Length: 492
Image (cartoon, rainbow, N blue to C red):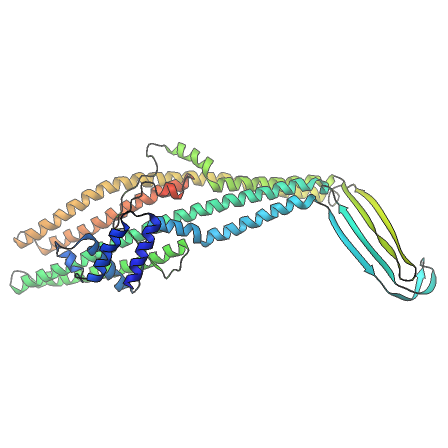
């Protein structure tokens, strides 16, 4: 199993162009083989000889064992690449686009004539009416063999409108395919960040469990020496049990997020995707100096769903316009060449050229045509309103993402101060309790503050990156290149 994990690491890094892959694989392999640090407690106790890669290996191993799964290590870039190749929504929309492509081609060929061959052989035996009056008895074998060429010219002019309709349907489905890819790209990034955030929260909760365990041991020692109270011991036991429950709940949430990420990128949901990073940096994808109105104008030019809706409107307009051709004469040109006769008298050749012109007064005395035009006009108006509504929704989404980014940025700065203060507060409360100047309640409060501060920092960093990615999507500029702008993997 370890060899498989190492080979997987190697393959991933080769694909992503990791410069120091050989050095990394060598170090990770040594860590896997050595296993000199079998417990997470070694990290908590501050073992000076433990390296960052060994620390992360221990964390990964314990989480993997507790979940009962083997991890599939991936980074954001790999997830995006796999999603764009394997996601089923993209495959479905691609099939829809291909169907509309061939329907468009089919519309182009509607102008070509129909050519067919007909052979007819009968056996007539018995009494028949001649001219509907004279009865006669006969036994003949009539034979007919002919080629027929028939051309309905431009089908009352409908040909051009059907062609325009098919072309715009194809254009709409192409835009829908690109929009689906953008949606999957967005969902992949969001799902990856959610999974990464939960992975990092697991580590915070894991540290919290061991902190609570050490605090319990300390309160028990103080109680046994008469310096502490039974209340402190029971409270420490309750805090440890609560920390263990929080850790278990976080593990379960993480496993569900792994399944969601696997589903988005198109792999088996039982594959336990594990973000191949140990931390996250805030990544600015959109210039904060650009105002909302400018972003909205960009969205109107770039969003594929708006392009798709505009093409859909044009397709329905072409469909409506085709009704006006109901009053245009229908012209059919046909040519026939063949042989006719009987078995007894032999075959004789013949040919005919026919021009058939039929004048129409619309469908159903023109009333059918008029009502159909009105119905199609209502559909066109509906699609126009849908476009207006879509643009309004896009503008609202841009506004939300814009302020989500600003808000998350401010919260990050506050979280950094909170984390620093919480760490100092916990150290001071422990020192004061040992000096008899603080109670265990102060330690508990400081510990809770530390855990929440670290979770808040992780959450706010992730929320900022998600809001920036969402903003990229909202203005129609999301792409693998733009999403991965300044992306630096925080490897082990």
